[in-house]
Image (cartoon, rainbow, N blue to C red):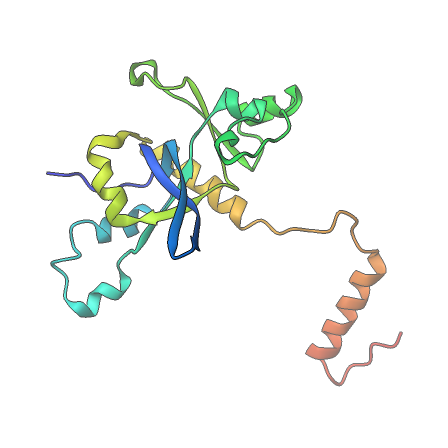
Length: 203
């Protein structure tokens, strides 16, 4: 029996199509195969999908998954050196020591740092960049899971990882220079005027 997909699954050799163009009626597809990815989709959604696409009535199929969200799991040394996206011909700056220390302690909200057990015979240290994620068809990922599944994060670590990813996506971008306090007071006065139309805000 093929086990279902789970949040926190780490799966090897997952394809990502990053370009598809048509020239002279010829379809040109460019893809990259990531050595490792981790499944981000909520486990309750994955559980409700797996194995039910045939069994459920048509009225219930609208809520089933079409795709699964995953993120590349990068070799930590490659990411620190800025060469982890070399196959996409993208080079980034090397991460300096102070910042790298924060990443290894999971104190940088953008990254999640892993240490794999030695018996998995994988890269000893890995990092997920929460800015890098993509979706793949659920049937495709389920099909390659049987041979490509390496491990699944234990529940406690899975929840920590999921919460950090959700927090990063829900962050609010503020301007580098905060507006003067008078602007906040003006906004407060406007709110009073709306909430209390009969109240004067002229002090």
